[in-house]
Length: 310
Image (tube, rainbow, N blue to C red; front, side, top):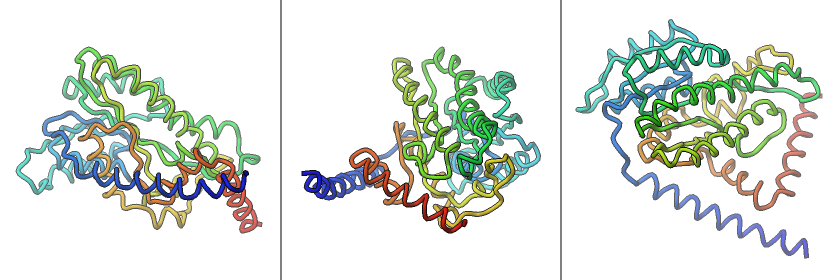
């Protein structure tokens, strides 16, 4: 009986994936709201996906507040955006910047006040900043687990909660968080990162339900691998920098394409978006519909990596 049920799951999963892919195509064709003149706050804007999101939202006519730790790189981005045209008839604006470390939650409230001073309101908050991790759980210090959680989880929720009252008072706003495929499935040697993204997914799912009454949408975006320096800057089990561009990252999505996906999701006020190739998307369904097989595949992946490092 188990074999029959197991075999029967294969066409079910494939059919589900087919419906999902058709849905994604139809959604992409759906027009979205304009972002002209909207105040958009982007954390982690100085590099990687955050930088590309800044370019995309700037070209859409948004008034940007760019946030990050590196004031110099933020100013370089401001200069770049100020000197380039969007290529459309839309009016564009010179971005503002707020410099702070998202991992220092004590400074987030002050940063939120500075953000609100820029334009008096926030129409879209894009929680993008984060760090990655590579390591064996047995060799990973607990402090590393805490540090990753501090940046990837407590940072975004601290900023969100600091800015949320102003949105509720206006009955207007949009909260966006860049999560990850690993916020939906956990893969070996990514424990700290996957745990932080799972927590992020859960928190913003709860937030979506609680603030729907105020007309404030919440969008969780889960990209797959993106060609950025996220793996290079990842921390390892002892807290040192990983310093390696993973093969999966090297062949990942172009960050410009992901940024356009983020822009489209915001315009359409979508609730939960996966921006990944079919295989990672299939893994999400496999984890739900056929968990036994998923666990076997993850264990096999762990053994393969152990052999390569032996």
